[in-house]
Structure formats: C-alpha cells, structure tokens
Length: 583
Image 1 (cartoon, rainbow, N blue to C red):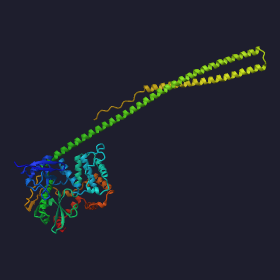
Image 2: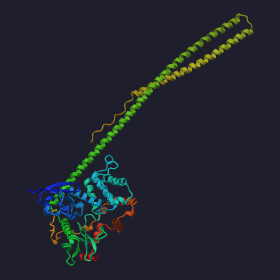
Image 3: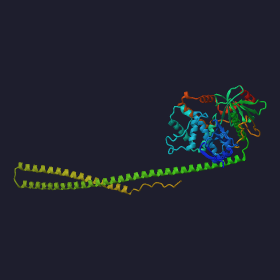
Image 4: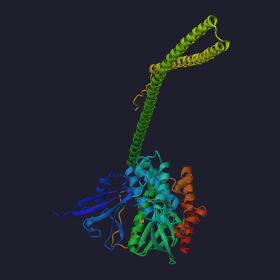
C-alpha cells in the first residue's frame, strides 16, 4: 500500500493536519479543507504553496498534489487563502465563516502594509477589530493594558506619530467604547466595508511593460484590469471592466486581451516570465467568471445559503436581545440589591443614633435625679436652719420681753437699761436679718428643687417618647426580575487562449456608481474626521512614506477609489488602449 503524504494546511486562524494518498488531487484536498472548516462559499478560496523556486503558487485542483512543484517538506505546507475578492462584502458574503476568513486576511494585509491604509482609517479599523475580538467594552473586564498583547496598527503608523503604546491604546479604547451593542460578526463586516474602499484592497499586482518598454503595474481585481505607473500603486491611470473583455491569451511572455469593441485594437503587454502570464490568465478567468455571476440571478444554492444566513442572523439577533434583556434584569436586581443594602445601612445608623440618644437620655435622667436629691437635702437643711433661727428669734423676743418687764420691775440706771436694750435690739435686728437671708435661701432652694422636679418630669417624658416611638419602616421588598476552480494551463505550454462569456448580464457597470462607506455613512465620516484631526497633532511629517504623499494628494484633489475608477474608464476602449500604449 502506498505511503500516505502528510499535509499541513494553515488557515487564518487554525492549522489543519491531513494524511493524503499519492493519487489525491488538489480538489480532493481542497474539499477536505472546506468541509473541515464548514465553508460553502468555496469560489473565493484556494490553496497556496511555495514552489521549488520560491514563488507563491496556487494549487491546481485538477492535478494530483504529488505531481505539482510543491516544496519538498514533511509535512507539505499549504495556506488556505482568499484568491478572489467580492465587489461588495455586505451584499455578497453569506456565511459567518467566510466573513471571518476575509476579515482576518484583510486585517493581516493592512497590518503588514501589503495594503496601504491611512493612519486615521487604521485606528478606526483597529477599534472594530477589538470589538470583533472582545465584544462590548466593560470597565470590569477590560482593565488598563487589555490591548497590550494585540497587534493593532501597521508599524508605519506607529513610527509616524509621537505617541506611546499606552496613548495608542487609549485612543483605540475610546473608539471601542463607541461600538457598544455591536455583535462581533457585525464588527467584522463593518471592518470589511471600510477596508474594501482602500485603493489596494483585493488587487493582485504584476510587473509588465507596454510595447514601448515602459515599466508599469497591471492590477487585477474583482472589477476589472487597471494599469498603474511604476511609482504609484494607489492611483490607476487606465481601467478596463471585465464586461469589455471577450478573449484573453498569452504566447510566452506576451499577453493579449481582446476587447468586445471590434473597432478597438488588442490590448497587449509583456510579463517578465511565462509563469507570470499563467498566473495573470488564471486570475483573469476567475475574476471574470465571478464578475459575470454577480450580474445574473442567484443560483438555487446561493438563494438557499442566503436564506439560511438570514435565519441564523435573525436567531443571533434574538439571542442577543434576550441576553441584553437578561443583563438589564440582572443590573436592575443588582441596583435594587444595592439600594436595599444602602437602606439597611441607613436604618442601622438611625437605630444606632436612637440607641445613643436613649443612653444619653438615661444618663441625663440619672444626673437630674441626683441633683434633685441633692437639692432636696439642701432644702431640708435650709428649713432646719430657718427653724433654728426662728427658735432663737423667739427666745430673743422672750428675753426682750423679760428685760422689759425687768426694766419695769427693777430700778436701773437709764444708761444701763438703754445699753442692754440697745444690745438686745441690735441682736434681734441681726437675727431678723439672718432669718430673712435664710428664708431667701430656702425660697431659692425650693425654687431650684421645683425646676429640678420639672426637668425630671420632662426627661421622663422624652425617654418615654424615645422608648415608645414606632420603629423605622422596613426596606421595600422587591420581586426577583429577573469555487469550481477553472482549469489552468500545463506547465509545458507557452500558449493559451480563453474565450470569456459576457452575454445575459444586467447592469454590468454598476460599480461605477459606488461611493465609499465614509461618504454614505455619516457616522464613519465623522469618526474619520475626528481621528484625522486628533492624529495631526502628533504626526511627524518627516516620516511620511511615498504612499502617504500620494494618498495626501489624492485627498487634496477630492479623489477616492470609485471616483478614480469612473475617471480611468472614460472614453471608448480604443482611446484607453491608445493611452496605455503612449505611457
């Protein structure tokens, strides 16, 4: 039994290992890969490998894997990549897995600077990439530095601005917060809708020469064939839509495109190697087929896929709405719980205050009672003293009377009697004054005793009110809320010709009416303007690249991808071919 061949296929987010037989064809391997990843929109994709000469090559599906010039390794290495790109991602990409694979591949092309992206657009795209990875921003889950391990921007953009890694992350975080409520799948789609407006998006560039020998770039994409000057890959000079081409062929290094317009001459250019012409023809046939397919009614299979995708999207939206609703309920319950905790703490504080007041009132009462007893004792003493003084006064009166009688009865000298009388009179006066003072003191003590008694009564009433006051109301009770790949030419053949179909299509130049996402979406437009203004303050103009200068000039004259497309397709086919020959 033949020994199996180990194969490793790297997709944008996984590595797949297979063991194939020596007679396994490229299509059999391709089918095995798409089945593993669950992909049905196979017409966009292919298997890429590095051949024995170091060139990137697409695996031919109709030939055995083992008979193709794959670099000899164990396991054999292939990349599963998008070979053709849609014209409009929002209209054409159906499955989430297709969308995700395109998102990851386009993101990698932008970050590696294979596709030029201006700084403000790169930051906005970075925020969508963060939303696609993390979902909604959350202060609890996304602490400072949560983007540290992520590659967010092209190195060119980082070097052109005087901003630290932390400052870049802060800016991207601000825009990440703006995307709250957006599903991860929708964030990927928004990323692609903006990225597809970049001038180099989905373009395969090949070095060519015209008959004069001028070095130029040929750019192939989903919309047609464009010609670029050697120093400018952003701004094509001449364009031919796929609907103007009826035949493509090559003879060694010479490539010939025959237009539908019989009055126009053949569009001829020269590639540096036969191998390049084979790749150009292969991509021309594939892009032309998809261009025509898009302009015809959908097949039953595509209709079914779109219906299923709509149903799945609706189901996701319902699940999302349910999750949002449940999250709101949880937040409501948490808020109510926090409110109850606050009210509980407030009640505990009030209870503590009541207890402190009660204890203070009891202490005051005890003090009042002590003072009352003390005053009562002092009152009794004052009364006793007053009684003693009264007794002494009475005794003095008696003595006075006795002396008076004796004065009558005895004969004394007037001076002696007067002296004694004056003595007793003075003593009586002193005693009466002393008595009067004691009576006043007794009245004062009696008045203070009454005040103490009244204070005692009031204190008892306040204590009674505190002790009998109704308890604070309890906290409220809340309820719990809760692709058939086209055949390629044999390696040994140096000549090949292919007729391209162009009948029975609708609106074959509809792409010329397109506008950019920023132009039709006011929100994106405002975001890009705000970012451009913000980054201008930190930009180091001395580090601008050649592409930056070209982009700045294009913006200054009001040129974008689709306006340029309309401009380079002006005039008839013959005029544009003549213009190409004159370059």
